[in-house]
Length: 515
Image (tube, rainbow, N blue to C red; front, side, top):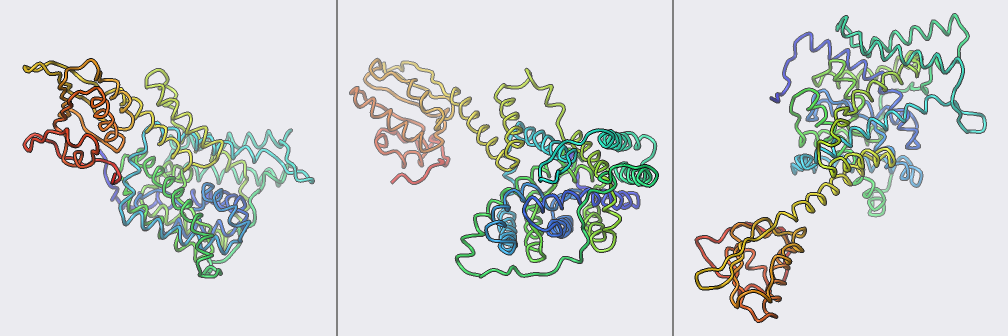
């Protein structure tokens, strides 16, 4: 049974604060990397992580979910930054937020329920693989000519040992104590060990700290320095729409994932508004925009963070790191953070999906694998989900096209009666035409739609086409039990409908005006 978390006991407050600290430590390299990916200064990513994380935690619809600068947004905005500069990005982020707020106000967040389960499985599995592959870049070293090669020798062995130690601590420490989140303990222990090795042994300095400088100030208030005219809108609007959709899809799917992990119920429409407010604000505080973060959200949940305080604490700790503790944070070994993210990969991947082979329809397996592969290849979660939903819809239409059938009989007057069963829509119209044999039928033929439903424009055209076939065969066609709206949309077959005000159904048809 789903429930809304309302427990604010001291134990939960402690867990939220400590898990927030853990998340903040993991946010730093991610935010820096995403800013660089978008061709921006690292602080722009960190500013976004702070403002979005804080406001989404307070105003969003999913306690315990972490938001910030993300790779999905970074991929979208890179071209805008290269062509027009960061100021146009800030303007696009503000507009992105307005669009997201509009989605929430119009209560469109509920449509995330239309994402089928195979698409959701493909989404989380693909995301796990993306996170894993991103960590492999840390096993490479940049050469003077700008190329990269894999690290080898003692550096590789020490890095693997630190990663393994981090993962072991995260996995097994909760069996000994829950006083401190295991992820936070792993980061502290791994850092101290690495610093000790650096002091007493001669090791590769990459292992001591591999995080770019994060020292900065409070995010400065800054109105985007762009002309407020039609030309600017034409430049930023397409990017804002794509960013808004990408951000909402990733955020709402993450919300569903956290719902499953915590067995609680989030609020999709409120999350749309919260994300929109967060992006609108970050756009005027020198941030790059963002959305919910699956990896950091799972770290938060696994570390005991359940309430809004965990997200607030993560944002405030991040600001503290930026303003006061940057020199300390820069000492965290990248190997430890890689170990943390490997545990996120293990926790994100739906291992149970591997047991579905042979137990669920092949089409569902195909859709899940397709979404995962598209996620990995394109690094675009929104695109993968949209394609997955389209594939699911096509499979659904194809499978249900076979559901339409007729039973025929001869009535007491010797005329043939077809009783139609199943929905008539674009997917089933071809099968619908094959059900009738005008040349072999009696002179008077009745088609009964009592157990069917006319769904769309294609269905209307199919009925008109059937009327033409019987007219060419010089047979009289009678259509009964069609809704008033259906009768009004029929062109050629409209005069053939026999009205029964008592039994005729009433429903709306998904079609444009045909006139």
